[in-house]
Image 1 (cartoon, rainbow, N blue to C red):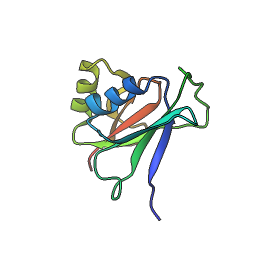
Image 2 (image 1 turned 120 degrees about the vertical axis):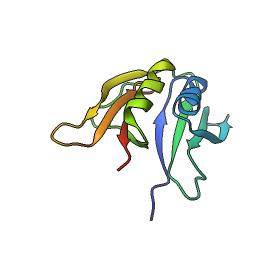
Image 3 (image 1 turned 90 degrees about the vertical axis):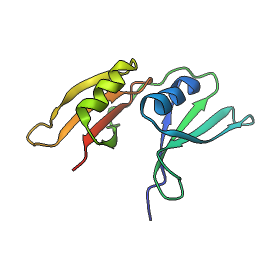
Amino acid sequence: MRILHTMLRVGDLDRSIAFYTQVLGMRLLRQQAYPDGEFTLAFLGYGDEREQAVIELTYNWGVSEYTMGSGYGHIALEVDDVYQAAAAIRAQGGTILREAGPMNAGSTIIAFVADPDGYPIELIGKR
């Protein structure tokens, strides 16, 4: 078994695709509209989804926002340099939720940013 994807519901698909591709450097792997169901799916990632887990963005036509539940945590991305990655995201207009620095009660360098719908994304320094 392996993890295939994590699905997020988004309020503006083009805005979210731009964030994940232009700000986080993912590639749009595939996208398909389902007119009968009135939704569009977009799959994004850093590599071939046959080998790596990806993000599925679901846009339900006509729904522009969602309330995030208290059970949701975050998506984690490994980066070479957390300070540099957070600075680059900030420079592109991204929202920093937690500045880069050592994690609470540990030494791993982390930061948190938010995607356009407010989903937290943790940046973790390579070990």
